[in-house]
Length: 426
Ligand SMILES: O=C(O)C1=C[C@@H](OP(=O)(O)O)[C@@H](O)[C@H](O)C1
Ligand SMILES: C=C(OP(=O)(O)O)C(=O)O
Image 1 (tube, protein in one colour):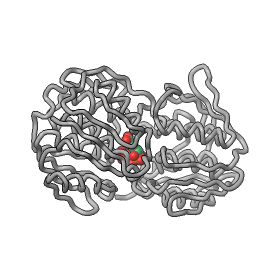
Image 2 (image 1 turned 60 degrees about the vertical axis):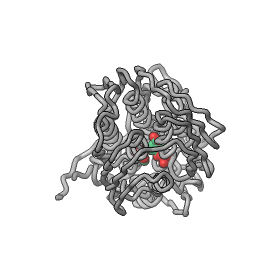
Image 3 (image 1 turned 135 degrees about the vertical axis):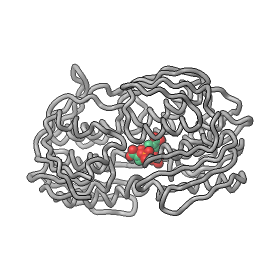
């Protein structure tokens, strides 16, 4: 593994925001379930996206990979059984693929790495128990066998553990030979991701009845229609540069769709509430800010941007609160512990709460030796924090960004970021 030493400097320039990982997962899956040929443009081969491509190929889908697009032929999907699915560290791939893999009778083996084996799957285990679907799993590492076939049913799914369980069912249930209902048994969090799923399903010809996010009626015997699609830019990745602008860097972001349904677009609202200014410039969007004000950030609909938004809060004037953030504890790491400990390592003053943080602003960070917690979003959060540090910032495991943004360090350098790579013994 290698560490990166960042010499603090102001970032300046234009960055094309990489494609949305969440939308890319969805487009690849929908195109793979359609009996026909689809082209998906604006693809970046992060580890998570490669996992979903390989997962669908394990079911028999023909996927041709080109520089930045895919040609997908779903005609032969479900012609292969005994699927070996390596989810890498992708919670989306895992939760989406479990229901999809058993639309037809199958024996599927799911493996993965990192923290994935520690992330909850009980929602699916309860469905398997109810439907007599065989399953065998290990604690703490992802090594899950699922044997059987998903059935039309009245599904009861909590809305506050992961929206990904609901998305996975929404992909699979239309293909069953009967109708189903998905009842959401607790207030839905990460609702924007369900909107992305419903929008994508609609583009591929699948109709879902949405009863105000309290339940979803899914008619069976539906057929996905092949559809060409271009993946729009990722607001989860844009958040790093939006915050960078708010804390004094000079970054223009291109390719963002301001009408996007992505929940992480809320980053703009958080920064505006702190007094940052958002302007549309000739080639994109720019955020500027000074003397940012403290605010209250509700994490319930946009968990992924909280680490980097916390960088802005940690440099704001006054005391901010991050609330409804409990689910940050079940991502690639416990992101409340990681954000609190690493911003405090840099001289911040962050206090941890069971479901959030209290953050008191400082004028600037001091610099220091930090841990990425092997989490791409923590590594990228620290890289943005480094632009407002008085001393260098060292971050371990710089490779972890490949999970979602393989070109992050190149883009960071293209914006003037000064990095030195440090080889650390294995
Ligand atoms: O459906 C998706 O694409 C995602 C849903 C979110 O998970 P939760 O619904 O568990 O919050 C988010 O954290 C993840 O990065 C991507
Ligand atoms: C948690 C994330 O993704 P996933 O749930 O797909 O692992 C993420 O990208 O921050």
